[in-house]
Image (cartoon, rainbow, N blue to C red; front, side, top):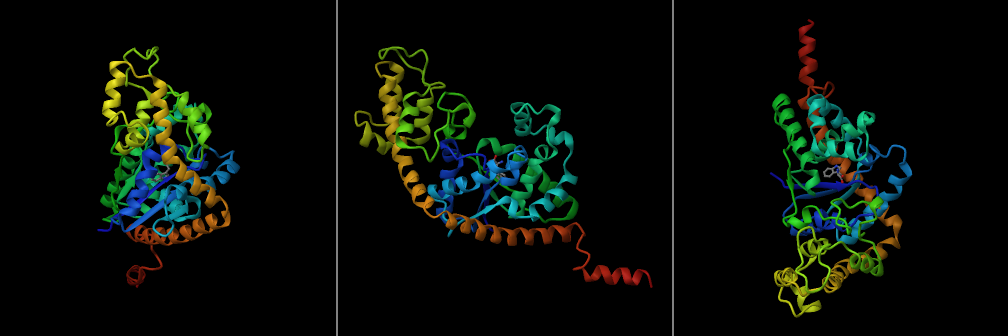
Length: 360
Ligand code: TRP
């Protein structure tokens, strides 16, 4: 069986370091590994509209921002198909059929939907489109026969829901769809990178994100004001690593070679952590180190982004070509789905023949 990747992001803002360690960095590795037959990366504008119906311009503006972030990180249109969700009409049709296979109570139990309803204070005024977005996400994944969905932990319930739909579909209509698996980050810190203020979720409105396109002095400012251990008041005090954002970021970003370059008095992160816990290591020193580490990683991305920004029509051309290719693939899956569901009236000659005989 071929190995196929599909994943994506909602274009509601520029991408930040949480997206990067949670999924983007991995996608690039997977793309370059040569282990996958196809890699589809989708800008989920239609999904973004499920809770931004009144803000179409915001979604529209952010499509190109996300595409720039993707390519700046190393997603390469020669190796991956980058496309825009709304340009693939087959996804709507698949969603429409899958809706028959999912109950309202099952959607209500979807943990991501549940928490987003709370967060957005939707209560019973939730738009139907938003409520059913797990179903449309199942369409996104299955349309490309994806076997693998590299994504953050928050997408787990979506992939689970997709697997259930696939299971049900195949049971009712015969083996047609592929059951996907989520591919989570292998490092605990990358599963859910906190905001710079230590809050669990990075969000634009909280102002606690470091964006991939952030300028060097902004990165430094954000790192130097990061949340650490509130009880670590004096350098001599023992410090705690629990909930200490600076160390969580180091867990996500730091490699052994960074010590040689920026903090040679320590062998590795374990040694730095031990010193912090013992006492005698100040926050500022650790923050300065993290700043070096982040600057090194983000500098290249920022430079590539600036280069790409010089030719925006090219970015749209990449997305147009990608969307055309994605549509062809989705259309093939839809043909199979229509066959399986017996709504292929005009291409099924046996049906026409059989009916003709019945009425003789
Ligand atoms: N829900 C994802 C997000 O919030 C975006 C998305 C839409 C997606 N369809 C997908 C991710 C399919 C993985 C697979 O960013």
